[in-house]
Amino acid sequence: MKKINKEVLVIGGGSAGMAAAAQISEKGHSVVIVERESTMGGILNQCIHNGFGLQRFKEELTGPEYAEKYIDIINKLDIEQYTGTTVTDIEDKGDHKVVYAFSSKNGMLTIRVRAIVLAMGCRERNRGNIGTAGSRPSGIYTAGLAQRLVNIDGLMPGSKCVIVGSGDIGLIMARRMSWVGAKVSAVVEIQPYPAGLTRNIVQCLNDFNIPLYLSHVISKIYGKDRVEAVDITPLKNGMEMTEETFRVECDTLLLSVGLVPDNEVSQKAGVKINKETNGPVVDSRLMTSVDGIFASGNVLHVHDLVDFVSEESQRCGAYVCDYLDNREEESQYTVCSGSNIKYVIPNKFTAGRDNKFYMRSMIVKNHAHLVLTLDGKEIMRKKQTHIQPSEMITYTLKKEDLPLEDLNGESRLEISLVGQGE
Image (cartoon, rainbow, N blue to C red):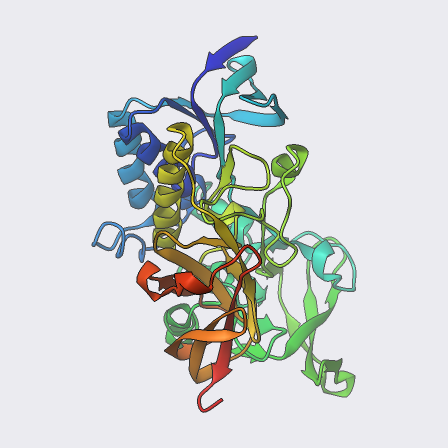
């Protein structure tokens, strides 16, 4: 058994983990990264398309190029890394934490630290999560698995594809499968609006003349050994219009039906989970319900852009350093989601500094207002354009905009989204 003593353990070596670790190391604290894959970089390694890094590095990069920049940073900082290593349990010992992990190279590892950053990312929902009827032939993949097969393993999942869900990975794979010679017959989305970014709808579907069926579902899958066809049924007011069902022949079905933060280890540590995000409940420092355990990136809530993940994780790293340095934290107050907002992260705010909030809309609006109310009194209203659930809203509340004289121990900040004129 190998024993490791550091100030901080970062679980996950993707963009979130590397950004947090780099920030912690730059501020003079010892840190170790544990990554279950054989290389650092996380999901970025299989995202060979461009569009990354425009905000963080001010240049357009592919996923592996973005990862390489952070790998270079953590290597220059001489941060200790353990790849091919899986964390199995976390024990809270009061003034420190003991983490148990194992790998084929090092066997069992016992890691003693003062703080932990959860940066495990997220996983894909699968067929079982959406309850699609029909047989169980081969040829059904999650979009992320198909992406790995094509981009890393050099394997072709199929030649005639239908994609379920219009999430960003599914849209990107529609384009990728077209590039490698497959025919993409349809992208089928249950909602009346796309689940991916607008730019991906344009670049991945419109540019390749791939039809997008909104308010439709895959009602049945056909095939014995391999997928042969699927039934596509339109929805009206949430009900299947079975008389309008049509069949599409295909040999491959790709599922892009949402992402779920990967929090099995978090729950083992006693971390409280937010039912709306499926990620940890965090305060204004991105610290979870367990003292000394922090979270950032897609394990906290699913982000649109990796640049947002890195920015959030850098702030998380800075908060970890404040915790290690025993800096006294000012009073924190509750943040809650109001009308037309699915969730707000973080779940607390601090009066003594600027607070950055991430949130998701529940409506589609070309023009709306973001409204902040403190204990029922409106304190801020900001115009928003082109609002939809697939695109995250960010807002920074400046400390000078908070009426400090109105704050008390029971104060609640509510963030809502209202239509123009409301």
